Image (cartoon, one colour):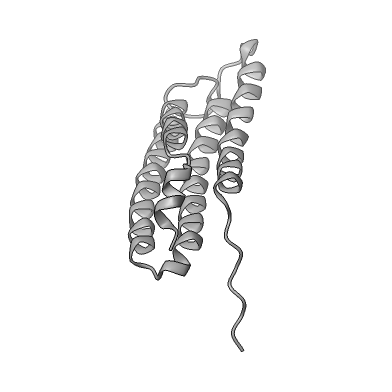
Amino acid sequence: MNAPPSPVLGPTQLRVLALALVGGPLVFAVIVAILRSDAVAESTLPAWFGTLSTGIELVLLAVACAVRAKLFARVASAPAGDRLRGYAAATLVFFALLEGSMLLGVVGWLLLGSPVPTAVPAALAFAIAIASLPSDAQFESLKP
């Protein structure tokens, strides 16, 4: 017995989900900024923690871009009925990977006491996410 196809997210629903994935780390960053604004205690973590965290964030950014390219290539070659579902899945995976990079950067900032270096790749991930929000034109190009 064949399972019914999963419902397709519309452009508005997909944008709301993408913004929620971006908004969580942004709200967390505001909270960290408030918490760290009057903190005078230095971090007890070694300096290499910031370097390691930044490296992991950059790897997550690279993986997000590579996975996005691979998944969107599959969407283009998918049957017409499956393109919208594939596009929604590819978009959510991409934004989830960007969210991971952003959250890691904010946690690094919280633990290290300084936004540099960990918040820099997080800000880059945020900028990429905002620039990559799904548009109605992208959905129109995928309709059968």
